[in-house]
Structures are given as C-alpha cells and as structure tokens.
Length: 464
Image 1: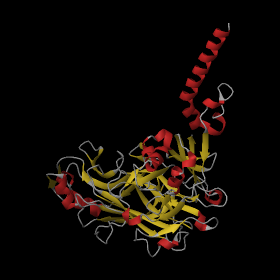
Image 2: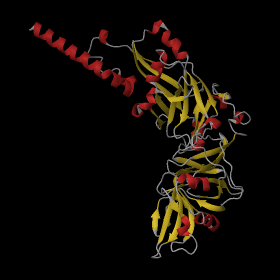
Image 3: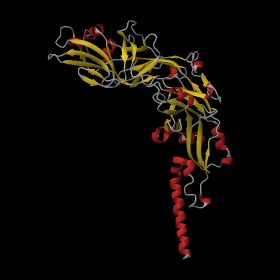
Image 4: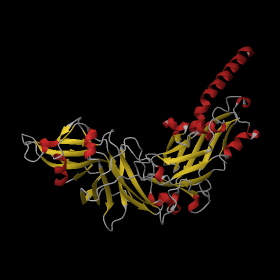
C-alpha cells in the first residue's frame, strides 16, 4: 500500500512540476503579482522558481525636435492646415504634389472648345481621412485654400523632408474661402460620396489643359504640368485649430476634367495621385511662447535637446508630438550595472515593460481624443538610422497603445533589453516616436522618469 501511495505521490509531483514549468511564462505575462502564487500549495517549496520584480532604475529622458530630418515624401496619407497650442507651439503644413495621367498617352484636343466632348470644368478632389482639431466636437471650419502651379520639376530620386520646397508661380490658380468638412459626405452628379475636398480650378486652368495638345507619356505631361502646391490657412482673426488628413491614393482623389459626351451625359477624365507620382508635405514650426520654446532659435540643429529629468515643473514632463515636432530619448544604461551585479543571480529574464503615464494635468485640460493611438520604440543601427526594436514586430505582445485603465502607455521591450544586456546591440537608448508621425498631428504630454507622482519606469520580471 505504501509503495502505491509513494508512486502516486511521485507521479503527482512530476506532473505538477511539469505543468508549472509550461504555464509559468503565461502566468507571468498575464498578472505576475497574483498568478505567480498559483500552485504554491501543490509543490515542494524547493522546486519553485524565485520570481522577482524590479523597477528601481535610473532612467534619463530628453526630447528633441525632429523637424528638418523628417522625411515626408511619397506617403499615401498627408496633412493640410494649421494648429497651435501652448504646449507645442504652432505647426502649419502644405502639400506639393505631381498630377499624373491615368492613361499611357493622352490627347486633350478632343476636349477643346467646339469639340463634341467639350470640357466644362476641372476640379481638384482629395478624399478626407480625418482631422485634428482643438475642439473635438468641431466637424467643419471655414478656411482659405490656395492652389499654385509648381514651376520646378520634382527630382526622380531625391527624398523630400519637412523643410523641402519647390519653386511655384506666385499667382495662385485658385484662392478662395471654402468650408473644410472632413466628416460630411458630398453629393456629386446625384451620387452621394465619402467626405472629400473639392475645388473647381477655374476656366483659365481648364483652357491651359485642353489647349495643351497630346502627350506620348506621363513624363512628357509632367514636363508640361510639374505639379500643384496646396495651402490651407485659417481666415483672418480665426484660431489656428484644424489640420485635415487626406488619402492621396483614394479612388476619389485626383484632378477631374468633366465634359459632355455626344449623348449629353457628363463624363470625366481622371488625373491621379498614384504611387508613381511624387509628393511631400512642407511643415513650418513656431515654438515661440510654447513649453518647448527652446527649439525656436536652434531647431535646425539635431544636437539640441531639452531635459525631462526634473521631479516637478515642466522639465518633469515628456512632450511628444507627431509631424516632427518632438521625439523622446530614454537612456537605460543603469540597467547594465544591475544586470552585472552578481548578487542578483539572474536565471530567466521573463518580461520587461516600459510604462509611461500620461500627465494627468494634460488629460484634464485636453482629454485623450487627440493623443497618439500608439507610441513606437526605436533604436539605432550601426548606420545611425532609426529602426524598430525587435519587440515592435510582434504587434500583439508589444502593445504601445494607450491603456485607459492605468492612463499610461505600456510597451513590452523584453527582447530589446535582452539584446542590450547580452551585448548584441551597443546602444542603451530607446527613442519614443508617435505612430503615424507624418500623417497625423497627434501629441501628448507624458510624465518623465523623475516625476514626483507617477514617473515613467521600466518594470522587469525575472527569476533566479
């Protein structure tokens, strides 16, 4: 009887230990503080891994202005408008874009005056993709739009950045006050269409196109019409409080030449903003009288940074914004000393989590509607280029999204820290940049690592 009992106890202990080894990582990931205690009454205490949590690291943080190093060319989504606040200052964006033929060749003489397919209008159309406004209840705003013809050819190979420009004809093709309504559907020729900006470019521009004759290729057409520069500004006396988002690849985006066919039915020829068309956002910054005003006079220098290492005041906060306004750098070199400390006797490195609370004063005054949906962690490779940390490729486990319950951003950086501590990567810096950094105006104020109340921190769960 005692032999059977011993054998049962051995089998039970073996199965329990084996099950615990399998399930331990899942317990740790889900809720370490509580779930690491599960099963403690089922196994011998000597068989348990000693699970520890540590977050007392000396992290330093600075913010830098990305600005002139921000590549803005050839993206699908673009921004247009002006926005100003006390935290980040004023940012204004405009669009330079080529306009391409939708056909291999084209002869516009058939649309000229007196022809059976005589053109009657030419309309710039760009599909909306959302908006950024100080007052999130705003759905529309009267603004001034200007459209200029570009007189300098785009490069076929060069990248364009936020400070890039091209020469334009100083007299606009179109300049009027219009209603910007990124959430309102429009009715065109009896059809209800998704929200879109529509600007009739006028008869003078129409006649220029229809009198241009034939083109044997799109390159030949681009020598004739090098592109359009589009600006959107507030009306005089109105606040700088809206930036519209646009989808350049939408089937509703392009320049539409409307004409009547032989049956008196309205038809159109589409010029397109396709993947072969070059385009970029130009961005102007004004940091004067903002919380990051130190960037005002020195913003062109990539070495200028602002410390976020105080325990109280503005320097205890991390100002993070899209459109190249600011990015943050965390230095985690203190981790290496902790790792080398032999008294830790590290066994398994289970999880590392970067936790950055959103500043509660900012939430109470601004809310969370316009904060970044996601913050991405970057490092730098041997060529000094920004690259995603390894964890960012596993999107489900990396997270980086805003957590409403804790009012913080949480990013799993386990693989990145393992690579750093094991010497596979040399840099101890993590760079924080908002997702959609060129296609949105999102911004947020975070608590720095020395903040007196809820500091940013790295929480490591390990076993020994």
